[in-house]
Image 1: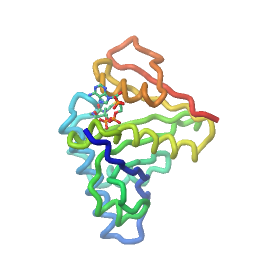
Image 2: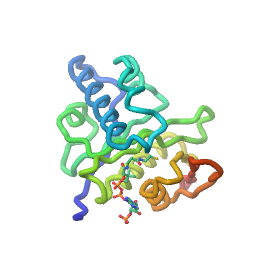
Image 3: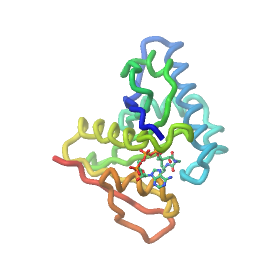
Length: 180
Ligand SMILES: CC(C)(COP(=O)(O)OP(=O)(O)OC[C@H]1O[C@@H](n2cnc3c(N)ncnc32)[C@H](O)[C@@H]1OP(=O)(O)O)[C@@H](O)C(=O)NCCC(=O)NCCS
């Protein structure tokens, strides 16, 4: 497949326009539910569980100061504005969630739409998360849990410098230390 470039940016945690904010919450919810629908075995959560969440839960996820939601869009889309997030087609999404001690962060919900796979979007999302993480703290330890049979994800993380640290269960813990 041709590797058309993509761009990543972090979703804003707030917006002055109430209708735009509501639309962003709806888009975020729909994309996450689509991830759970198309890749039901990739995540510890489920479509049924998250479909039942009220708007407050989705809004809380977006507003959470300890979480950064990174999305991937086609190259050429304006970044870092609510309008851009609303008007563009999202190719993928990932969350970076800071651990309580601030020295580590978890990658969560990494997902690329089936139509956009195998063209570097997953790698770009990871780079985007690492970029956001390096702005939080130098030398951050990045961690991710992945099913032992999720070969695509394991390879993706390995390519981004993650190594398997704990493989004693059906889920592997992988980690990567940021360059200082
Ligand atoms: C895992 C996932 C995010 C990869 O996204 P992607 O955009 O296709 O990944 P990339 O194109 O950036 O691939 C980067 C590397 O990952 C590896 N990779 C990706 N898909 C792969 C596959 N199906 N089989 C083996 N390796 C794969 C390759 O090493 C690839 O590098 P290469 O293209 O130079 O060979 C995507 O398949 C996905 O969303 N899967 C369902 C959700 C999921 O499993 N999330 C992870 C939860 S822990």
